[in-house]
Image (cartoon, rainbow, N blue to C red; front, side, top):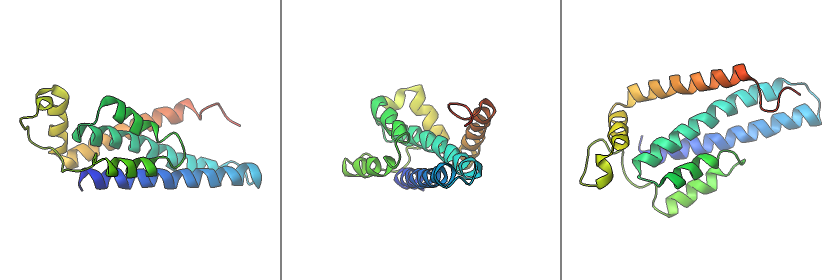
Length: 153
């Protein structure tokens, strides 16, 4: 899967999970069906939220985005549905064009250790997928132990 497809798929999934979470909050607070809708939708959204941030970093590094653009991409996940127009903006600006960079080129950035590490990761997609999944699960599990933002209620 090319970087553009990975980014786009996860950006859309992030927007869909925002929808689930908003509907769940309407059910909890508007219709008073209890906590279960928010628990389920929040769990799904939280996992996809973290996955989107990881994907934004990985794709951003591969596409040689600036640090500010990578941070901006990650930040779009905080505002409901913003990942979709941001994805369209990236496409219009040509920021998603190109394959995974698996080998060094003459580009000066390819000499940095971060680019070398990124190339190593994208050259091993199965290992990278498993490793990133485990890392996301670890962060997500830690967040679950810490509890929801703002406490219960």
